[in-house]
Structure formats: structure tokens, C-alpha cells
Length: 145
Image (tube, rainbow, N blue to C red; front, side):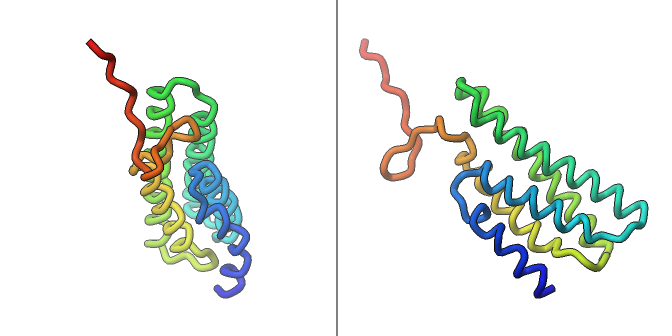
């Protein structure tokens, strides 16, 4: 277990990042590393594939949100990414319940929970989301008249 923690230090930067896309990239790398340590049992490998699929989906959705110009579209894509992150947590919980040795699933779940909290708070809207100095989202000016 100590070996896994020392290897995951490379993921400490993205996990602490305020950018959801960077955090998700760190989670993708960690999931790929940890699923490789699961047993070769068909059930373990099936759940590992589904976990990887969900993790990659969240990453692609966050990447898409970054390049979307319309705020409504960006917010919708971020909500889809939140659903994918919640799906990641579901697969991780099932894998944890099995008790299969060899992977740090609790650490992955903590990373996914942090990303889910970030997306649920609305800070996952990407770089196009403007904020005041106090961290609150700016509101468009109200037309006079």
C-alpha cells in the first residue's frame, strides 16, 4: 500500500488543481494504473473496463466543455461530466465491496468525490465562466428601460 501512495504523488498536483479538466486527467491516469492491478477474474476485468469507460467519458466531456463557446452548452456538458463522475464513484463502490486486493480504490474515490463536488458547485464550467474577485459568478448587466 505504501508503494501505491508514493506512485500517486504524481497525481497530487492535478487532484489539488482548481481546473476540473486537469483533475480529471489525474483521475484517468490513476484509474488506469489501479485497474491494471485488479485480479484477472472476468467480473473484476468487466468492472474495470466500465470504470475506465466512465472515467474517459468524464474527461472527454470536460475537454469538450472547455472548447464550447455557448455558456448553456458548456453548463450542459459539465452536468453530463458530473453524471459520469457519479458513475465512476458507483463502479468504485462496487469494486471496494468485493474486497479485491491490489488497488487503492479508496484514494480513487476521494479524487472522484473532489471532482464531483467541484462540478456540482458550478466551478466545472471551464475557463469561459467569469468570476468577480469574491469568487461569485458575474451576472450580465440588466438592460435599462
